[in-house]
Image (tube, rainbow, N blue to C red; front, top):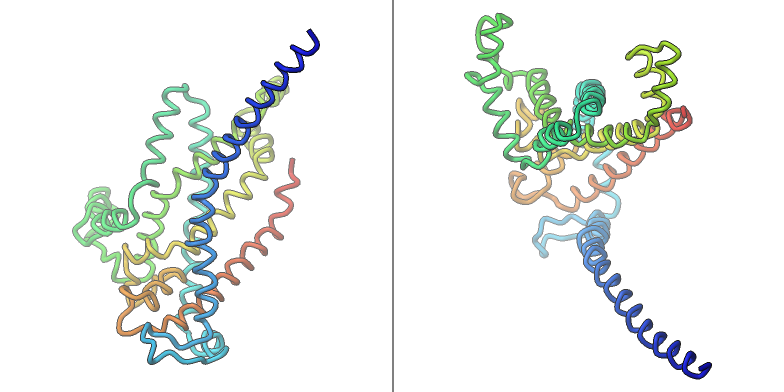
Length: 316
């Protein structure tokens, strides 16, 4: 009997080993594609851009020459348009985020209090703009804010305007239009983030607060906000990063009009140095140097924000 038991155990062991090996192979195969994409589309372009940043490079090998750190120096000393685009980026950020984040939180709280089926429907509705192509969003809102577009007609019917307003004829008008389109396209994702954060707030905390006589506003500001503060911190960081990187949207919407005053740093990089979008023959090497500096500055912005908002992580 003992020998029979040992023989069965050995046979089971032989069957288990190929199964484990098969599972391991499947795991490696699943990881292979993302890893290949990461190295091909992330690591390699970073290395390529870093190497080209020290050259004058206009895609013509006969014109390529080593210039050392001249490209980096010129970004800091001569390129006023680059630093103006950073100023525009912060303008849009401070105009949009005070509306986008609170509105997303309010909608998330409202969705939490509706039925499960209704909540799923409204979450799908709010998320739909995020899956719409950036170019399509630009076309939609360009037509809406056109001189004879829907927005002007609505404001005239409401009595706010007496005649159509040329939104794209002024910097402030273009920035307002840009913020409106960005708010429409981005708020859905933030609603989902806040909804996920709200589901982690224990219901017994609200019940205890109701027993103590807390009303809806007290529960919102004294319980909800403190308990989701760490997640709120991350959502705000993602929104800031998205504003810095959102160059394609600006190109599709205003293309920098009027006079390049609405170009964010991401849009400026595309319009000035990306072949196919830039006018003339762009110095791609200089664009690579500017891209490296932009990445460093964006990282610094994130680190400063993390430092300033550290207390939000310790609220609860």
